[in-house]
Image (cartoon, rainbow, N blue to C red; front, side, top):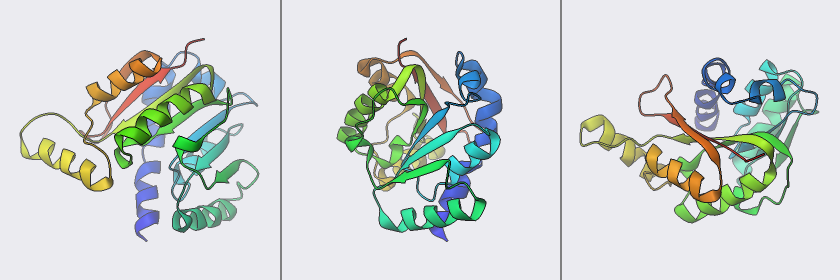
Length: 201
C-alpha cells in the first residue's frame, strides 16, 4: 500500500507536466508524439509515472529503472493490469549503472532519494543516454529558508536518502554535467520544483 501510494503521488503530476512544463522545452512535446518517442523513468518504483505518460502519449515507450525487488514486483503487476507490457520495459538497475547511449528523448530523475555521488554519476549517464536535444527533468523537494515549511522540506529530503539539495544546487550540477537551457519550474506543491536541462544538439 505504501509503495502504491508513493506511485500515485508521482503520477498525479503528469498532467500538470504535460500542460505546463513540456510545451516550454523546445521541441520535446513534438518528440514525445513521434513513433520513436522514448522515456527514461529513473527509480520507477511501481511504474506509475511510466504508465501515466504512456496513457497520455500513445506512441511513447518507456524504460523504468528500479534496483529494489519489492517495487519491481508491484510494477510488473501494474503494467500487466493496464496492458502496457509491450511499451514499458523494466530493468533491475540503478541510474549509476546505466550504459545506454542516445536512446531517450526525456528522462525523469528523482534525486531526493539519492546520495551526492549517485546523483553526479547518474547525471553523467543520463546526458550520454539522451538523444541530442533531449531533456532531463530533475525533481527537488527542498527549499531554502528558516521557516517551518522550508525546514521540514529539507528534513524530508534527508529522510528519503537525499542531501537536501535546493533547486539552485541542482541547476549547478546540471551545468557542471554539460546540460544547457537550464530552468526551474514550480508545481502544485510549493516545496516541489522541477529543474530541467537539455543535452546539447
